[in-house]
Each structure stands twice: as structure tokens, then as C-alpha cells.
Length: 194
Ligand SMILES: [Mg+2]
Image 1: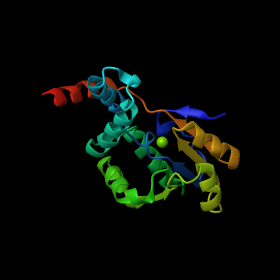
Image 2 (image 1 turned 135 degrees about the vertical axis):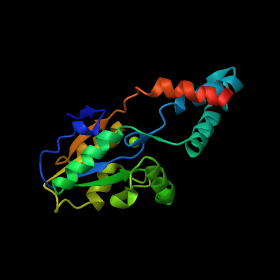
Image 3 (image 1 turned 90 degrees about the horizontal axis):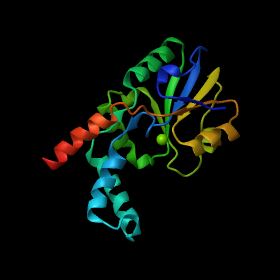
Image 4 (image 1 turned 180 degrees about the vertical axis):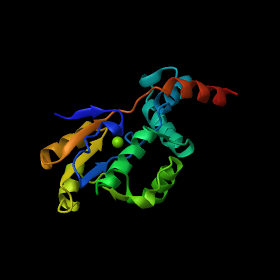
């Protein structure tokens, strides 16, 4: 069974020399208001909604643009800092494991910096969406230095691939809290329509 968490403080880090493999998008950084915001805009331009042939293409285009323009938010900054400190004091380590393409390295590092994370402190693995995360781990990450390994991700198929291919890894599903969601949504609307 995979445990669902909404804070990094919920990870079981009791064992020394724990390796945490952590996803980036929607696990560390997210754009909580993106989907609703983009949908509202596209709906205004396409009154027939999904019955319009270009609706989904336009929605995707706007969402892609949105994440380039807007700044991401951290899903759980204090929990993240607490996890990193615990790992430091127990000879553990955090590595990022993202499906992003390696070409996004510079942008990814810039985004992490904006969230208060120093990307130079952590190794970033890029799968480039070429394979499942379970396959990537099996082929590229050695466990010899670690007593135990934890995998954290928001995306069920990746979690399942790690469970299937690397059963020795403990998997957690991260579900970002949406407490700040409505407040930030209202703020963004005001800015947009001003
Ligand atoms: Mg993700």
C-alpha cells in the first residue's frame, strides 16, 4: 500500500542513511491556480467549450505559457526544510527525480532557487519522459550507499512503476494542500482584470 502525504514531515525518516528520491512537478513546486484560471480564459473565447475542435489545443497552449510566465509555489516549504535537515543529520540524502527533459536544467534550477531551494545541494535526475521512473531507478541509481530508499511522487503510474520494478523502495504519493488556493486565485483574477 502507498501512503498518501501532504507534507514532507509525514515521511518516515527514522532510519539512518536514507535516500529520498523526490519528484519535482506537483510534488515540490506547483501552480495551484493554473488549471482553473486557464480554463476560465479559454471558455470565454470558445463558448462551445469542448465541442470546439481547437479547445483542448488552446487550453494546453495557454497552460504551457502560464508556467513560463508565472512563478511556481512551493507545496510545503517548511516540511521540505525539515526533511532536508533530518536527512543531513542522519547521513541521508535527497535527490530529485523528474520526468522533465535535461534541456530544462537551467530553467529547473532557476525555479527551484525561486522557491528557496539551492539546486546545487541536490543531484537532479532527468528521465526526459523516456521511460517509467521505476525503469530509470533500476538502470541509473545505485543503492549500495543507502540503508533504505524512499520515493515520493504525485503521479500514480510512476509510483506503480517503482512499486513493480523496485519493490524494496518505500513509495509515498504526494498530494499538495490547496489551502492557499482560493486566496491566490482571487488575487490573480484581480491582477488580470485590473
Ligand atoms: Mg509530478
